[in-house]
Image (cartoon, rainbow, N blue to C red; front, top):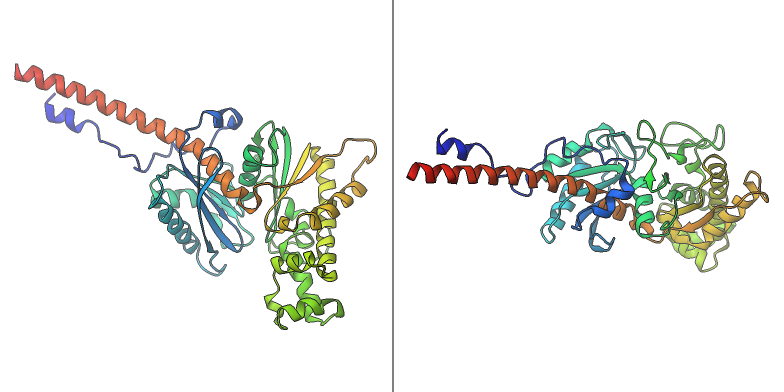
Length: 386
């Protein structure tokens, strides 16, 4: 064999070269053990919701080094527009940080391989190959999961769920997301879509949900439900809504969830009552989940959880009233997420670190093979020179 053939025998793979599909296989179920040996490298976590895309560089201790965000493109736009937004945020962060992998928490149903978004009620994703599309553009490993799963992982690793072996996460935002962790593993179900609690039917024939059904839980306990009720009262010029009507200058469309929470904290009776109703519906759903899953802890996250005890205390009261076998069984702890709306982003980045390890190992093996070929080529040169 000639020296040239040795030199052509192996390519040099730069650190950011696109990895093979085998490297990016779904993270195994041994997450609890494997995260302890994951590389302590910075990764990017992305949380995609119905109204915003938030991205941040997160270190191995769950600390956010930098965070950026953008508005979620309109539903009517193609999925590529959302991909463009994600890519722009990642590339922006990569200008200032050495990014080793990207984790995405998507507001939708993600398949068991964590590759495709099967359905997103609040975005125009239908069987969208999100992981492959972004891996090709970003040239680093990409991990895709449901946003509630990533939030639950973040809270279990760094937040309110630390030390819990049976945890249920409920995220209240535009809708309701959910996730289940047992023995330190996210339970995704056979097809990857476990934990979609927000689309359990709680009121037959009730409010229409973007998922296509009626009476889903998230139509009664979510940010959308909160805003809908406030706007309906304001549009009807109800006397109880005069405070919020004055605040928005009669522009009903300007009523938002954060504004309702702000007014409730300042003592507005209508806004306080609306948060109490949302919290009560939350407690009803939690009681149903306790009957089915019997966790030790419920962690409440998402943007609506910023209302703190205005929301969570009514939820605890309703939970105690509705719990099956109440008075004769232990009650699960109900806690507010400590990472707040950033839980999904932090969890996605941490899960991506497991994929980064596989990527780094594969690259190391490629480098070792290259070095062996180089040594063989050097030996051949010396032999030819003699």
